[in-house]
Structures are given as structure tokens and as C-alpha cells.
Image (cartoon, rainbow, N blue to C red):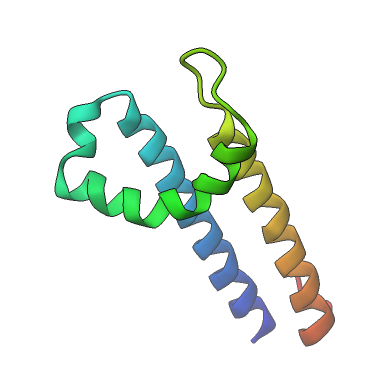
Length: 92
């Protein structure tokens, strides 16, 4: 049971990281952001990226905040697994 929960958490974090990467790639092609898929990705990803963009300003044309956001998400994933291990037993 604990393994299944860990796998679900992993999949959720991986899907969200993929959404961030897809959104960043779409930023290189602005016409894609105007599509329904681009707008959906924006609604899903922008609320998470916004605080990082407020802290880390772009350097020239490069926005480094998604990189920091993905690292933060990775560390959050580790934290969630640690909490799950404490609650469910050391299964993963």
C-alpha cells in the first residue's frame, strides 16, 4: 500500500514537472501560448511560477525562475516522501 502511494506521488510530481517544461518550451513560440493547450498550461503552471518570478528577475532574455521552481519541486518531492515514510513506515 505504501509503495502505491509513493508511486502516485512520484507520478504527480513528474507530470507537474513535465507541464512546467512544456510551458517553458511554449514560451519560445508565443503563438503556441495562445492555443487552448497553451492557455491551459498557463493556468496550471503560472500560479506556481509567479512567486519564483517575483524573487528571481530575468537576466536579459533568460528567465531562470522555472529552473529554480523545478529544483524546489524536486526538494518538495523528497520532503513529501520523507513525511510519507514517517506516516506509513519506511517502504520506499
